[in-house]
Amino acid sequence: MNSQKVNLSTPNILGGIGGIFLVIGFLSNFLELVGLVLVLVAFYQYSQILNKPSIFQYGLSWGIFFFVTRISLIFFAGATITSTFTSIFTSDFTSDFSIYRDISVFLAIVGALLTYGAAIFAAIKLKKVLIELSIILNRNLCDITVKFIYWGAILSIVLIGVIATYIGIILLTVAFFTAQKEIQLNNTEEKS
Image (spheres, rainbow, N blue to C red):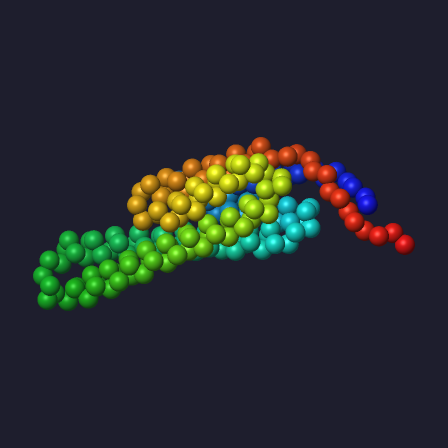
């Protein structure tokens, strides 16, 4: 049985920087996208180093659902704003513009449901990634992070859920930066 020390500095730093970009992503969608890509690259590197493809598979699923959540949130916000302005400027119910108001309300509801569902699925996938990574990252910090992000997704209907999700992303960033720098891997290859 061979064992080797593996350096984890690169995925730790990439994940931490990606987490910072996710946290400040409310300033710009581009920053959030950069953060998402950096965290996904960190997940990929962890999966390669630990020889656990499930880390990247769950991480990629999380990334897709996270991205869908953000896109549908933009869709939801746009439909809500359109619905509000249509309601303000067309007070007559028999107006030709009432159809636009009805469509905008319908699109706002669909956007809200898509956002809510994608946020919950993203939290579930991230939980699976962090369970796999708990040997590297601080186990207690991973558990707390998952709880904040999961309950934040469920409670995202109210403002407290959004705040909990951001706290969870901050904790994820801290988990990356405080992760082990090296890990001892045991190879069980048979020599002939």
